[in-house]
Image (tube, rainbow over all chains, first blue to last red; front, side, top):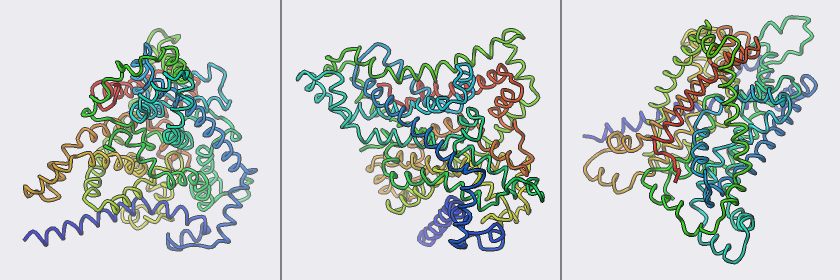
Length: 295
Length: 314
C-alpha cells in the first residue's frame, strides 16, 4: 500500500525542486534577456522573450559610452584592484601555508589560530577599522587602500596549509634536504610545482572575493574615476529613470538610463566571475570542501 | 555583499581525522628545518596580518576609547544614538527570517538532492550555486528588477500580494524579508554544496543497514542523515549569524533607488557606523559601533575555532 504514497512524495519532491530551480535561475535568464529589449518592450513582452540583436547592440553602445565611457573605466579599475589583490594574496598565502605546514618555529600555532579566527570572522567587520587606519596612514584614495586589504587573505593561507599538510610527502622534502637542497630550493623546486592546483584555487577565491567586494571600495573610493564596477552599478541606479524618476524630468541635462541599460551593465560586471564559475566548477567545489570530504 | 555569499567556507575538518595530523609537530622528517626558514616563508603574510588584521582592530579600539568626552564616552554616544537600537532591531528581524528560512530550506533541499541520482543531483547543485557568482551590488540590482512589479518575471506573484508599483514592494515593513530573500538567493547554493559534502561523508554501511532495517528514504534522511550533519548545520547558523550582523550592501544599494524611500542611510549598524564617520567625521562613535560588531564576529569565530573543533590546528 506504500506504493501510491511514494509516488505522491516523489511528485511533491520534484515540484519543490522545480520551484527552487525557477527561483534561482529565472532572475539570471531575465537579466541576460533584458538588454535585448527596449524599456517599453520589457513591460509589454513576455519576460522570457528575446528582443533583437539590434536592440542589444544599441543598449550596449548606450551603456558603454554613458558618461564618458565610465563603465570601461570602472571595468579597468575592477581589474586593477582584483588582479593586484589576487597576486599579492597568492604571493603571501602560498609560502605562508607551506611554512605553517612544513617548517617548525616558535609562534607557529599562534599564527595558525589567529589566521583561523580572522578567516571565520566576517571580513566586513574589518572594513570600517581598515578605513580609519588607511585614512590615518594617508593611503586613502590610492589603489593600495584596496589592493593591500584584498591581498590579506587568511582563507587562502588555510587552504594552502591544508594542502601542504596532506598532499606533499614529507619524505620527499627530507630526501631533498639530505641531497643538499636549501630551504628555498626545496620550496621552489619541489613544493611549488606540486602545489599548482592549490595556487589556482587560492587565486580563484581571492579574485572572486575582490571582484565582488562592495563595502571596502565603497568606503575607500570617493571619485567616479576610482570606482570599481560594483560601486559603479550603484551609481547607475541613480541615473535609471524607473528607480529615480526625479531625474527623468524633461529638459534635464543628465543622460537618462533605462532598465535594459542597467541590466546590460550588470551583465558586464558579472560575466568575468560567471565564466570562472562555469569553467572552474569542479575545482571550486573541491576547494569549498577542502578537508571536509573523504577522498 | 556583507552577508557571506562567497562563502569563506573553510575546509572544515572532522574530529575523526585529528589523529592523522597530531604528529606534525614532532615529525622527525622536519627535523632538519631551521626556524629561520619558517619565519622567512610566513613573513609577508604575517606582515599583512599585523598591518591589516590586527592593527585596524587595535586602532579602532583606541579610537573608540579615547575621546574628548572621556574614557568610554564613544560607546555611550553610540548606545544613546537614537539610530543605534533601531539599526540592530532591523538586522535582528532580518536575521530571524533569513536564518530560519536558510536552515530549513538548505537542509531539506540538500537531503532531497542526496536521494537523487548523482548526476541529476549535481545539476541541481550547480543551478542553485550559480547566483553565488553575483554577490555584491550586482545581485541587489538584479533583485531591484525582480521586485519591480511592472517588469519582473515574478510580477504575477507581486500582484497577487497587491504590489503594483516598485515602491509598494520595497515598503519599510517588507525590507527584512527582501534582504533575507537576497541573502538566501546568493548564499544558499554554496551551503548546499557544503552540506552535500558532509552527507557524502556518512559511511555507506550505515545507510545500507538502515535500509535493511526497513527505513524508507524519508526516515533515513530524518533520523540517520540529519543527526550526522548536525554539526555542519550549527556551523552554517553560527557563521551566517556573524555575517548577518554586518549587513551593508543590500540596504545601501537599495537606498540609492529614490523610490526605495523606506531605506534610510542608517538602516543597519554598519551603515550607521559609516554614516557617522562620513557625515559628521565622528570617527570615535564610528569606531565604537564597529568595535561592537567586531566583538560579535570575533566571539563567534573564537567559539568555533576553540570549542567547535571543526578546524585543524594540528
